Length: 302
Image (cartoon, rainbow, N blue to C red; front, side):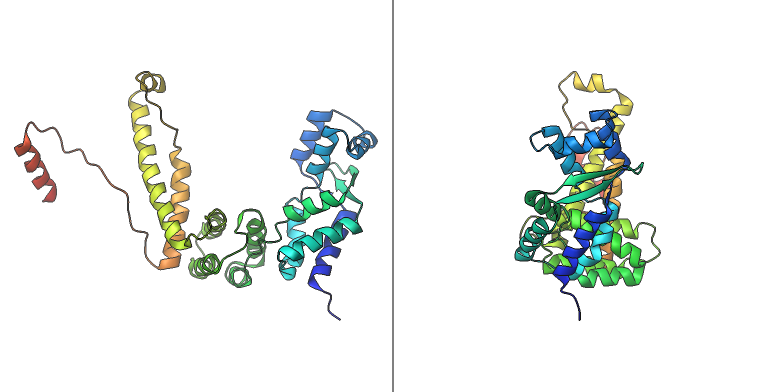
């Protein structure tokens, strides 16, 4: 008899709590820098003290699902396909079923963390159960790029993807996944970028026009960033700031990288390069009167 997917997900989370939630080096660094060399029993006493704000903060940190936990729970999350009511039921059932979780530090130290009903609900929320990567997208990515790539994208979607996925967002993601060159070195990065972009869309926005609009803004930012770099090469920050120049710093390499990813997604989705909607400027020299200006314009037209 097949197990109910929601119950299977509850079992998977409870089993993970019992076997241990792995913690990374950043958590160990936080514990050491904040609490010094407290032995495990003192740390557990601190965590168990619900009236101590430092203990409460540490408990919240230890009950945050890391990459390993997210990957381990993803198959059960995808199979459950929970809606709002299903998420609420899962949180309530988990709060009734578990009272503690085991946290495992990088050096092997094991800490028992109390789990209240509210803490269980927050853990479920952090899993992103409403951000399930559409099955058609996951299947396409698995077929073209492999199962591990599909799992990584599904985990990323739970953190930064749409909640919930609209038909338009799912259609764009599947189109890009099905048409990106499988051997392109940045294909997987393009898919992750697209999922993040879709997750940040305003409600009701059309995905492809919004992506093209974002591409246009990036192109304009890149042009300004390069102009800024040229100005800095010709002068320095203090000289530019003295007359009152106040501009945000634009990092050209980061902008250029995002622009390249947007271009790759648009090319895959439409089959053609994105239109260049940015204006341009050109040094036409110095003219003394209108006749000279018209002559310069005629030269550029030729």
